[in-house]
Image 1: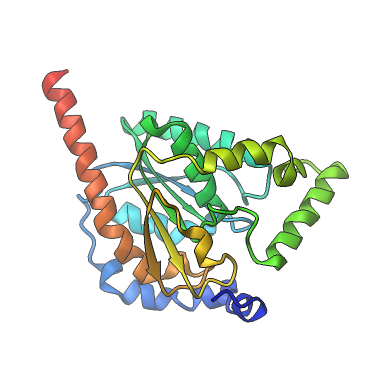
Image 2: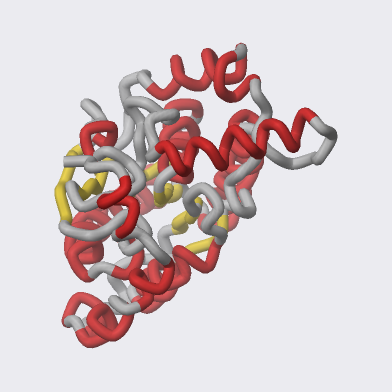
Length: 255
């Protein structure tokens, strides 16, 4: 159950980092097949206020298995949804061109919501979608402390500070357009990873009806450091990479 302050108290960057030794000792980290990823591109979109460092373990894990991860270049994911989505789309398009095929989108929290919007907009560029602790059923349903920070950023934006959330992302056309897109059926394979121990996002909001919803026991901030998450990702990403290789082979054979 999402129990307010007690749930939020479990969330901290320090607590997440405590899991790093457990992760690097785990077989899911140590047993790496460098041919698994077959050069498939992966675009990583971090959560609200987190930045690329929060997905650095994921990037390292992916590279060791032959994937080609890159940043979505959305910074700390605190800006206007539409502007962040445009930046993410440019990263997706560029990386798909570099790697010669559709890419995997992997996003945490708000980054997962942005990744879902991108997958709905341009499914031909997306091989598969991973959402980690992403409240896709209600992007404004995060813990009240998080929403207070978000609304404070809109006030700073209204005062003239650029690059932050706009009030339109909460109530205006920006919100309405993106929430409509968020409910569209997905045309790509997707997994939504959620946790009942999540102290930032109520787990119920991660139950995307068009994704395979898988439960782990991680905190919200700790998902990128949790072996369970990589146990979920391993076989799915390998399957998607194999599918991409089969498509490339068909193109070479009949092209």
